[in-house]
Each structure stands twice: as C-alpha cells, then as structure tokens.
Length: 115
Image (cartoon, rainbow, N blue to C red; front, side, top):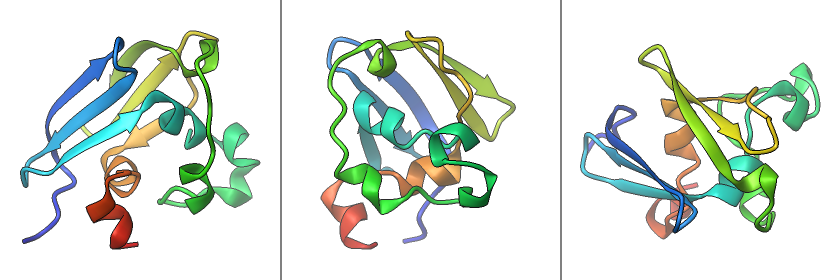
C-alpha cells in the first residue's frame, strides 16, 4: 500500500496532550505535544537554515520535553492546503509542519521501524 501524505482528519486533544492525524490511507499518527515542539521545523529551532531538511532529525524522538508553556498547544492554523502552523502557549509559532514532515515524524512503532 502506498503511504499517504494527505490527511483525512486532524484533531488536537489538549487533555491528552496529543495531536492526532488520520491519513487517507487509514494510518493514524498520534503525536505527543512534546515531540511536536522538539521537532519544530523552524530555522531557529533547527539551528539555522543550513540544518533545514524535509524530514525531522532522529534525535527528536529521544528528546523528552515536559509540560510547560512551550509544549502547551494554544492554536493550530492551516497553511494553505499543505501544512499547519502550531501556536504554542509561550508564543512560538514559526514552525510550518507540512504533511510530508508530519508523516515522517509519526512516532508509532510501524513508522519508526521503517526508518
């Protein structure tokens, strides 16, 4: 089966502190808020434009970010039909999480095993 990079639905569950994407191919990705913040794709969080690439750095999967304003979701804003911007309670809103990036960021065992 071809892996879809097109979301069918997107849900943010603030009480569970997770972001859920159900992809058109039926796969469900559950992203803890801490992982999304650790993997912020903005140039500032990645350490400059020279570190920008279409996939997340593997190190984000071992980074543990606890509950704080930097990992509390304030809002999610659509960026056209290709991405989302997550606004964090600390005001950070520079990362544009495109669908390809989010699909490769999926933390489930099935997706991580394929890396």
